[in-house]
Image (cartoon, rainbow, N blue to C red; front, side):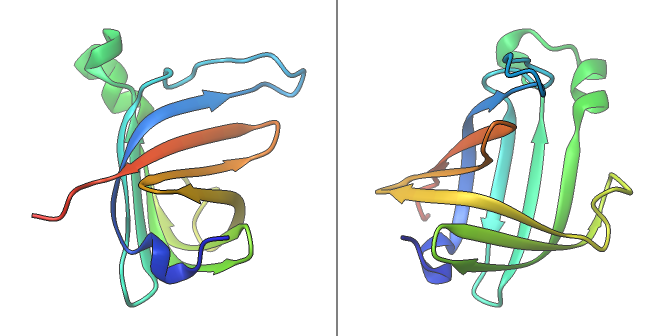
Length: 126
């Protein structure tokens, strides 16, 4: 199980799966969206995600799909807790959200079972 310190750094989103309540996969932002997650040593996080031109999204579609929020994070076992201070969705602001996480080498998965699963790859330090 990952610890908070294992997440420190910059992570690029490399895949995204999303399911509707009836269990069918739906692709509101595509299978390979553009995005990053950053975790710092002070316990802060920043997420940014949108559709990608790699799947043919227009600039307008990318802007309409854009999601971002930031705040503080903690890890307990296989649970990531995100206390969102601000974001572009009013539903996120001031909430604490929990996600399941798994770490294997430089691959991190973050999700909510039966709702979504994001796959991220650690960016090389420069």
